[in-house]
Image (cartoon, rainbow, N blue to C red):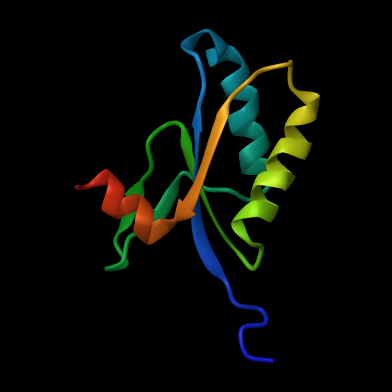
Length: 98
């Protein structure tokens, strides 16, 4: 049973054209409704504000399941095309601070 109920913290980053900024406000609200956060602790336990297009969640879901859930929830938003990047919080900070 090892590995079952293992939780990971992921950062989800959206990339979309600036013309979709009004839709992003609805997307931000949707992410908060799904228990995502705009603040996450780094490897030292220090709370860090994520950039405005990124959200964090601690979950037992796999990254692919998180993406499926987000895309399913976004079906109610206007037809927008966005790129979605999901990585562990440690990978996010390594990429962000290099």
